[in-house]
Length: 148
Image 1 (cartoon, rainbow, N blue to C red):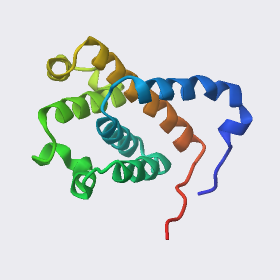
Image 2 (cartoon, helix red, strand yellow):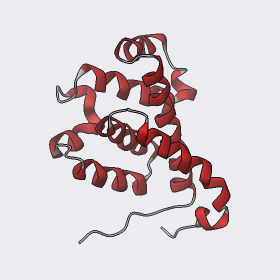
Image 3 (cartoon, rainbow, N blue to C red):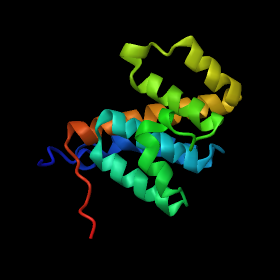
Image 4 (cartoon, rainbow, N blue to C red):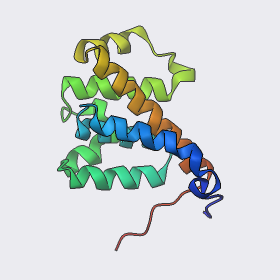
């Protein structure tokens, strides 16, 4: 695949807001490893190879276990993720597949039981942000760098 467009060069001012949102999320108190799991899972669903590669590398550097990374795409079928992570992953999937899921009440109930108001708003913002970045990655055919 050939990259179609370097969006950051084409519209640098447009990405200042997304970058500012990312900086907010870095400082908001949301667990970094949880956020990385969400970024990977959402990117898997959206088929963004660039973001999967980037966030898996970041998760490894943050100390995430390889087995959990390997099983993230089948998280429902394992006991590797705790209740808070499972609720967040279900919420991420529901919001990523919004046209099909319509953010069902049972998924909301699970995530609501695990996160207070601010944390749930931050979690939802993190999901929205990675979905936005995935649209650029997939739409403009960003490819991961080759690793040795």
